[in-house]
Length: 123
Image (cartoon, rainbow, N blue to C red):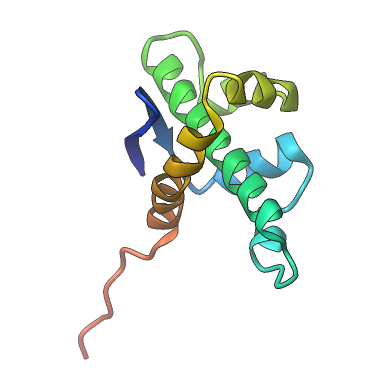
């Protein structure tokens, strides 16, 4: 799913696909499914996860744009250049409260992409 959200006054494009979890794990060396299912995760853990996931979806949108404009062959090629250090640079673009307020919209993009779009067969 592709959507533009605002973080403060800045429009930020997000793209969530089936590969989002794989890119998260590749860059942050944590399994996002394990994090999401951890009953003992603190609020700080959940916020950190949401911030990191938003970053991944932002980079996927940038990758799609790079592919469209001929600057990358595939999203995967672009994503292989993204590092954990890029996350800190990305965070520096925003005020903390603006980012916190935008996280629910980002999580909506993530959950919408994982929702089933199939319908039950009629008998």
